[in-house]
Length: 66
Image (cartoon, rainbow, N blue to C red; front, side, top):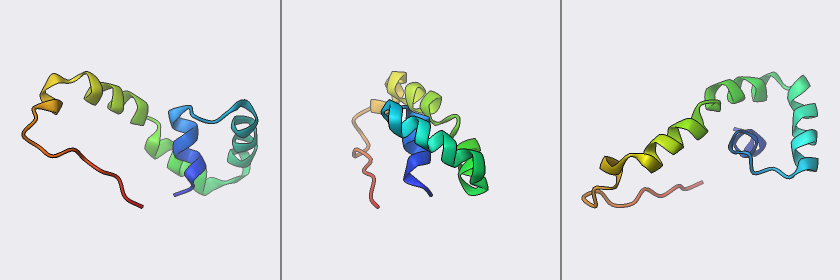
């Protein structure tokens, strides 16, 4: 996965990076496909953040690894 796709979807790119990624996106079919897969990610994260049952305290915190 191209790191720029996730950053783009989450809206964490600065203006210059955003414009550069959009130019890249115009020609990269792989990133276009990844963008489609991740398009709903911000909404899903918001739902988790606002769902009181997702922070029951019974489960250990999730960690991300590379």
